[in-house]
Length: 245
Image (cartoon, rainbow, N blue to C red; front, side, top):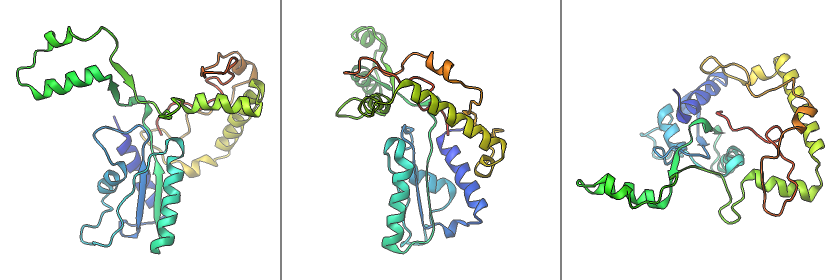
């Protein structure tokens, strides 16, 4: 099973081959993932090392950058690399982002976190005795991309945007249907194939649904319950999917 680092490495290799670039041609690499692997604290530098792009004999080489800005991560990195090009006169940079949401790292609540730390610190740790002191509840939760001040995810925030701009559920459904059909047409005409490198036997975008229709989208229940929004409208078909890519 591949991980995010494998996916990113494959993508950059294919990009370099397509652009006929060698490792020595790359002046700057920027890559990140929003839901990080705990074993990879700095994704960009880790990818740079895995690809063999770092020149240990060149003290002036610019090292890889790592930025996490949720859904606009790769755009922020692209901006950072352009700024570095203008500042240092660099010629070639690679920017990107990767996500493997099917295996996001689990987190535990504070009580379990303290318990696990103590278990590692003490050779005589008694699991049974310590477990009895913790309230019975599910200790696990997945990482979430929420604003630390408002507690709102992008989906919850979008409900506020829908309200402020007066976007109806029907307009959202119409936009979603048009988007899927346009993507299906582009796929059928081979436009997308120019941008896709087959990976693990997958050579097409698997999220395109050309047969979706407005009626089926409108039947779905709202997904996001935003405080202050009495009638939420965004559902699973009118919001972005959770996927690997």
